[in-house]
Length: 117
Length: 113
Image (cartoon, rainbow over all chains, first blue to last red):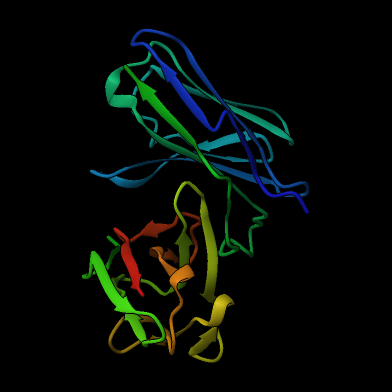
């Protein structure tokens, strides 16, 4: 089975530009997570979708960040305008969670390494 | 509030030697426990998990971990490491009733020839 697929794998862009990161979750999974990983802060949960609906966006740093999940097989994380401090590795993860089973493991993509110059 | 502590940021070990990576957690509610491995330029991959039952859990690649409720620990062990085990290892918990992982800061395992 294909795992979580993220694109692009690497993105280098200049400050002020719009950046769009893409994620295709594992087929059949109903939950999708976006994380950011930096040396200073480790892994941070940015946003959690369940059945395509944003459930928890409390980790989104500021209004420059937005995420959408138009259907069960696709999600985007957008940064506009981008800043150098947004440089990090962004991971998408998916899982199948239900009311009685919130403890299922998350499956991670290989990440997008974002560099803002 | 819950927290996960991985005291060792780096662990060097010679090939074929045993290794233990330590993980302690703090939580006011029961938790589920996980170990993930991250190879360079890759995402996190599940090594093993403890949800209930036997406190000794076996995972992939010859790793195992033991849940110790009284010591609130979930240490990861392997009896004989290989060069290919060089990676970063993350301990994580999910408090019962939630979906959010709480990750440790990671331990970088370096296997030396």
